[in-house]
Image (cartoon, rainbow, N blue to C red; front, top):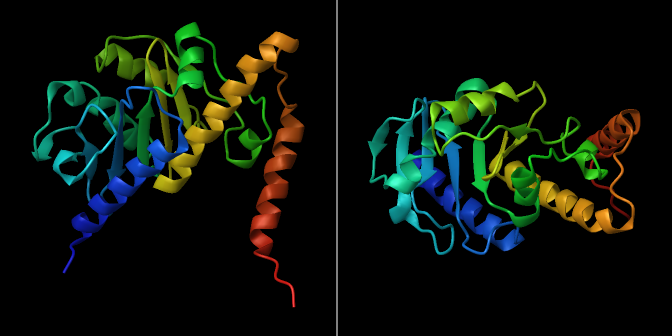
Length: 226
């Protein structure tokens, strides 16, 4: 009979597959994903360097402070564990953290520019404050973690890592995967828009209205005909 950890490992693999299926990922397919273990101060983490072809053999179990509990953690993965752990520590409602080098969003990270609320989706999916840039620090260093924490606001659901990539987090794995797509699409649209006058942010009051309207439709449930 499957244990809760077995079930969570299955969810982690499906989450990795969902990320690669979206296409919001770099050519190398580099990235890492973690899921909080319900009821424990632990998380499951993808220890491979690539998300392509990922399977159970690459899953490790960690304490919430980043200490290795089970599995093998190679150096390339060990270097980024602390940024996952920091999100879980600072945002207790988080159930999933995803780090990728999705091309368009990473272009903004490399440019040191935040992703603003250029698309309606930012209001619908809880990104009303946009995606801030955390200043550069060497991979996995205390400086890099401090820089991430410095830009975390009460409503922040994603952070650009300067000269590195993207970090997204939410209450469920599905919501976190979706955030990655929403952010990548907004970044792509803004880069394309640069050639025709530049992207324009949705006014904050209109962005809030979009979110409220989406919530109202969600509360009303699915409509069905006769």
